[in-house]
Length: 452
Image (cartoon, rainbow, N blue to C red):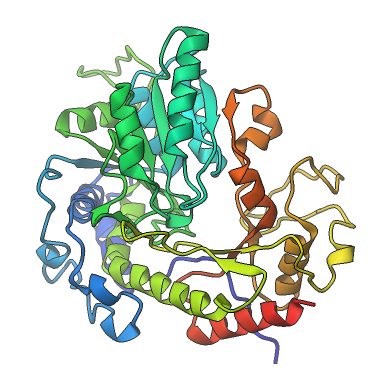
């Protein structure tokens, strides 16, 4: 019998979603506003300002999973009732995507054409593309080796150099929590505060990750969440922006709903966007929130299995929490392969140009006919991806650094070689809530057998 396809990461339905979807249809709230949207925002707020859950001491053990997260129809207040002091003023706006959330954070901060915005280079393009929507210029900063996220020292070097070269400070800083791993956020905050530059946290991959017990996305001025179909929870497509207060939330809502002025007809004095989340999608999100803690616990559990499986395997390193401050959700579990590791089929890697979608391309690619680019994963990494694919296991290279993307070739970049090295040697492994212990054992065994 052919083995099932083990997918990289796919959100899992809780069973509660249909209740809220039905309510929306019954009330004819099939629009980008409504009761589900309002409730989803309030429930998200309760989560993002929550203190660390009681099972934190041993999140890897299945017997310590939350036995049940009370569904909203029973008692919504039982979902994360304890908040961290000082975060109660935070507000959340539900939007159609995480990319929209990044964009609106820039709009809210007044980023204009010609401004510079410092971006983490090692990330997905949704962190930097919205900068260009505003006509602004991304300035890329490389990563440090511990968390794989923005290097605080390099960040300060970049700020000093931009001021010297342009005579003005960058308008904002966008840090990313790559694959769910918390950045050295307090060091980054110190730099941002020293130069009085607002910080945007792209926590699209980090829902449920914490730094010193605090939910990521709540340290800076704005925090970005994503509910795409491959994230910790999903609304099918959607996102949210964590705002510092009610005033900023109202301003973001204004831009997210086409920037309509208060008249009995449509009056527009600023450019707005159609970025609000639909009431149907918000209903899905409300159901998903009832299993968020369970999803986080499962991702951490399989991270423990990967770490154990690779700990004595020469040539392969699992990327775990680097210190006691970081508490990753392990949205995607990742490994790196040493360049000298030999893998089955390595000599045949990159012999044929890609013609169809690979991994998360959603079935759409622009075929170039080319086999190589000037920065690509090592042949042993590509060979391992192919081995896993033939074994019905989806894997994927790490994000290609933005400063190595052709579209950004003329943008300023402050690099140290870390992200390029990681891209050349790294691989993402299946990590979703439907991945079983048996699947992990099969994946680890497949990787071991592929090593020559």
